[in-house]
Image (cartoon, rainbow, N blue to C red; front, side, top):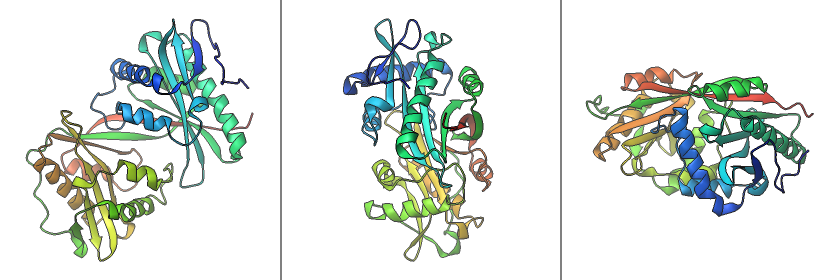
Length: 329
């Protein structure tokens, strides 16, 4: 197995080297921007957004070894791509090792993409061995439907699509359906603040407890991203029974987001989800937001598509999630 603590030439014309920290961040952002613009991915996407400089830094600071779990690809002395590995445990106990790679569009088709996947699989094999998770591990990778070459590469290397993520958009917040007079079943809205994060997180985690291909809902990560100004949280007494986590978009983007819409299992199919969604959309409209997006699993068993479409959303993109069993060889 290659030792990626030193520079490694994988294929002619390209140099694979370890990540070097903050100095690489501007190059990573440049590659990501070029990949988004050259791959046909909607620049307004919230399912596959362009990261901020802070998000690149936060990803590098995540648990693990960033100098071994990321690799940078150079061509003619310039950064041309990079790949990164993350991992988590699904609700069903599967240990998922996700590798993602980005390569400048003009340099594709020369074998570098395949070499990046092979590097990732080698590194994941080492991680699986260190973690002792070989009996329940799998490789994972993502590819949007508008990236046929990436989809073909993954399939050629033995990956299969196990589910997808569908992104929806409501292009404007004009002519919204009216606000509900009251929430169903005696639930009530209360303003959300930091003291409510754990209760909201726990309700969402339980809502997905019987759903496959869903990660472990790390509370610390949830709290770091929390922006409760426009959250719509429904309570019955001391318990959170539903939430629409609506977030205003970056200034000038014109795109806000419904990051999560969840209802406790015993409260579903009674109108609470739709009521919370409409409350959130009205809150965003009052804030001056122009449009809103959200995404959900394509095989969602709770008929979310019907709910979103009834509130004026339309499907805009599909993103595949691919996996391959880890065979230990």
